[in-house]
Length: 500
Ligand code: GDG
Image (tube, rainbow, N blue to C red):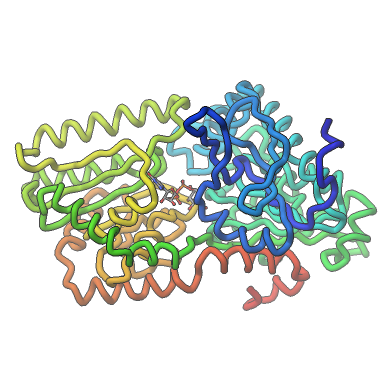
């Protein structure tokens, strides 16, 4: 019985995301419990959550699981159940096989199925209902990511008193691509239920505003969009966001703007400074046969990450004889992801075929060209890998931000290492002294890899220092505070240049 939920209508600050920031663990006696999953979002929001006595609404990660609301590390967790059918249709289907490829510029073909869409609506309503139940009068709700784009409007319909934020972690595509979506109007109407809609890049925010103009004809001035008022209650509860346009028509102003996400930079540096992790980095290089140059790729095994393009460039350099397996090793961590979606199964086959070919053609008994790892690792091991890598290869074909690029930079307190970074990753807007590449241009990519390999120490240090400054200053705490500040700032002030 949902109305008997504890803390009904009590939380001043509520985060809503598909997954709760916890993993289910089972102890030696088979008793299940939850452990906080160490994501950047939790780190960023934990202090805000504690201060505001906040709650997090989301799915536990197990099908048909609906534990009572519980507390973990001082955060109130409010589970939303998903059945196996919900997972198949709303999550694997509409979220990961329709929206994900569409929003990443159709690198893989999006599948459009009405049944998936219908379930997406139902599940979004379930999340919205839960958030509506537990939020305090006049509270703030922050909805995360593409799985929940209908939640802002569904929430506003029930609770016009709430201040609602939405952050999109992935790109928002150009209208020519977005317009393929059979439910394109419903999605933007869903998002416009928010007061502030955050994107990774300025270009994403621009694409969204253009879609709103094209599909709904609403006025957009800079980052502010005028949305017609639907309920009288909105006028009273959101005064600072109401303005008049034309012949005294009342509109609610919605801000659509870039808030580039980041990492907890200090915690990466702290790990990197640990002697045991530095020892592990040396051990990794030794294990590889102490090659002169170690290159590294770390990605979820996803077709957006450009792993195939990276392997092609690396393989051609070996074929040309420009690099030699005796001096250069590429370590590729490809962490398992979305393994029930067929595009991901196909990708895995392609990548593993390519890795096998390159290793078979160029490897020797003592040196393997590519050390390929289809595993997830603890964060300590990731940082040891970052320290061991002379060159970090981030060659995404489309990526909202790419936190791996920022983690590499944050870990390199020695001001060494070269980041090769795709201009199609959001991070390239900020990390301007990386060696920026177009991964589709295989010749250009090969040149960048060679340049990285032979870059003088002084140039490496100069480039890395500039990137480190940026990542240290704009860390994830800054990201969440600037978003939350925008949520409480009158939108006319945000429309002015300079206000951030
Ligand atoms: C989405 C957007 C945006 C990966 N393998 C392991 C591991 N990871 C960690 C990385 C990093 C995270 O996962 C991946 O973040 P990315 O940003 O690189 O990419 P997505 O997963 O696609 O994330 C993206 C992000 O949301 C945030 O808004 O930047 O553009 O696509 O933190 O380190 N971590 C551990 N073991 C692994 O094997 N511990």
